[in-house]
Image (cartoon, rainbow, N blue to C red; front, side, top):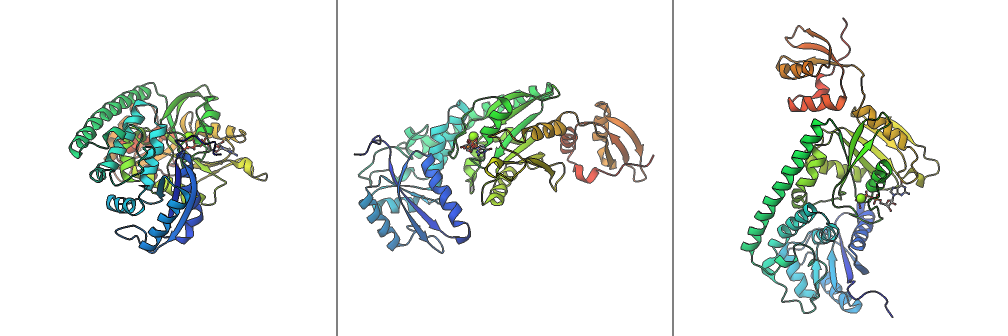
Length: 432
Ligand SMILES: Nc1nc2c(ncn2[C@@H]2O[C@H](COP(=O)(O)OP(=O)(O)OP(=O)(O)O)[C@@H](O)[C@H]2O)c(=O)[nH]1
Ligand SMILES: [Mg+2]
C-alpha cells in the first residue's frame, strides 16, 4: 500500500541533453529541483539531441517512448528541463495526453509555494502571468486527466481561464502595486542611509548556505533546508559588529543557471536591495564540483541587475566537509574583494568574516591616495564636505593629488555617483 497523500503528483522527468560536458551536474540539479517542488519523481528519460525539434522539442520516436512510460508508470505530469514554446507544450500534451511543464513553469511553481510576503506574492504572480499569458489560448480541454496541482497553483491560478485582455490588465495592476513596494523600499533605504547603517546582501547559488550563514551571523532562525529555493522572501536583520557598529544583513532568493530574464525582471523590487547594498557576501558551496561555473552564473545575474560595482566578499562555505580544509582569508584579484573559507554550520572561520566586514565597512581609516582629473571637482568638494581630506594639491594636469581618509565603500559610492572609476583614480602616495 502506498502511504503517500493523494495529492502528491507522480512526475516523469525528461532531460534533453544538448551538452555532454555539464550533463551529470545539470541532471542532478534538475532532479533536486523537481524534488524541491514536492513532486514524486517516478522515472527519468534522458534524450541526447543536437537541437530541439520545432514541433515536439524531442523527436517523434522519443515522444512515443515517453508516452509509453507515462502509461506504464501512471505519471500525472511530465517535466522537461528546458523552456518549451507554448506550441511545443501543447503538441506534447496532445501527444502524451498528460500535463507537460517546462523548467520555467517548474521554478515558478516552487516560487508560488514559497512566497509568503505581499511583495513576494506579487512578484511571483507577475512572473506567472507573464509566463502563462502566451499559453492561455491553448486551454486545458485536450487533457482528460486534469487534476490541478503543479503549474496551476499559487497566486496566478485563477487567471488561467480568463482571456488575455484581462491578464494584460492584471499585469498592469501588479506593476502598479509593485511600484508602490519599490517606493517604500526606496524610502526605507533612504532612512537607513541617513542613519548611516551600511547594508550587506547575501547572494549566491541556491542551496549554497546563505540562510545558514544569515542565522549564524544574526542569531536569527530563518528557514534553511537542503532544498532548492528554500528562501524566496527577503529578510532583514540588524547585526552588531565587534566594534559596536551596526550593519543590516539581508537574506534573499538564490540564483540558478539559465534564470529566465522575465523572472529576474519580476523580482526587481527584491533584487534592488542587492544593487543598492554597500557590500555583497557571495556564498559559494565549496563542496560543489561545478563550483566555478556556479560562481560565474551568480556573477552573470549580478551583472544583469547592475550590481557588479558593489564590493564582494566571496565566502567558500561548508569547509567542514573536508577535514584538511582550514579557515582562512585571501585577497581576490579584483581589489577590495576578498575570499574567505569558513563553515556556517560549525561556525569555524566566522570571526574572519566578521573582521573583514568591519574592515570593509566600518573603520577603515587607512589613507587612500587619489589623482583626481579636472572633471572631478564635485567629487573633491564632497570629500571636503565630509571632512575626509588629509592632503590636497593641484597637479600639473589641472587636477588634484589628494589623500583622503574614509571608508572604502563610501568612496566607492561617491565615485559611482560621479560616474568615475575608483581604480583609475587611485595612485601611489604622493611625495610631499
Ligand atoms: N556541511 C555543511 N552544510 C551546510 C553549511 N551551510 C549550509 N549547509 C547546508 O546546506 C543546505 C542549504 O542551506 P541553506 O542555508 O538553506 O541554503 P540557501 O543558500 O539559503 O538556499 P536557498 O534559500 O534554497 O537558495 C542545508 O541543508 C544546510 O544545512 C556548512 O557550512 N556545512
Ligand atoms: Mg535560503
